[in-house]
Image (cartoon, rainbow, N blue to C red; front, side, top):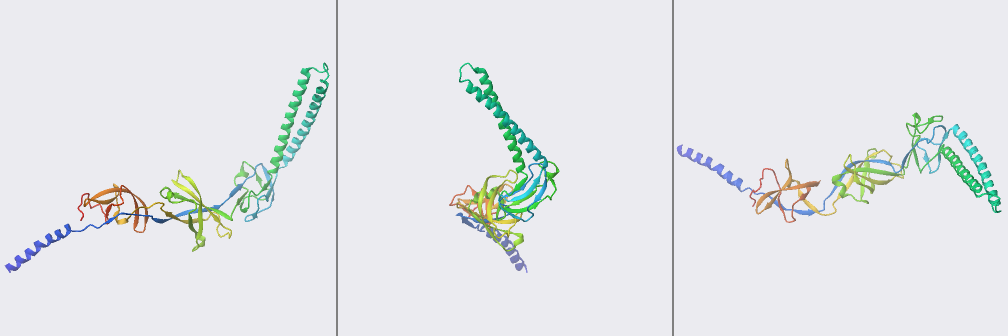
Length: 352
């Protein structure tokens, strides 16, 4: 029994030593960094609007006399949409026309007087130089008054032309906020809402705000796909047509617009779409497995192996795709990194 007890104690003392020896020899897996052109996709909400859209208001205070269109009406450029009525403008036009005729008569008289004096002055001593100058000045002043009267008359005519509202482009009437007899005007209660809203719906504008981090991956002409909730399972294609070239001060993102041709009228202005943006790298970048990246309170870093020892190298994280991630920092093409990095591996850890 004594011999057996001694043997059991000896075995118990040897086991921890063997375990420690095994842990010291534990290997650390490494890999050589490589460059890749990472292609990822970004899903963002976007909004569809009419390529052209206008809210139509009344230029002068008036009443609605005729409505030629209603909601959903398809209109052509220049088509008459609405007729307004303002009786006082007719009186103003008559008054302006009378002033114009009066001024024409005054100018004709002063012009005739000047021409007769000019003809008489050809005979020396008949008309003084001062009298001729006074007649010429009177003629010029009356001509200026005539031009002012013509301008005033034209102004009233222009105001009357605003009583007939025409379509500014081909489109569809999306809203109507007045009825016949309603009072409308440039100010006051009659100007709260637009009379009509006209939208171009055969061509739409798809606008999306792209975060600052991803703006450099998009170029004009890139093709993307999008979908809307009302047409589940159906995908639409569009190409980037315009970029703002600046970041929105509130969202810190860039507005990117696509032109969407909508001849079938399946898509409606105001729809919210989900856009799938392709983010294709222009140049190859360093790409590492996600397990090689450590995110700590001190920042993101990888464990670089130099002279068979680990060294923390702080980096900036880029795009992520599946189990890979872009990294930017002081890394060389021949760098060797620890594949399964963690904060427990300190600087200077021996690596075989």
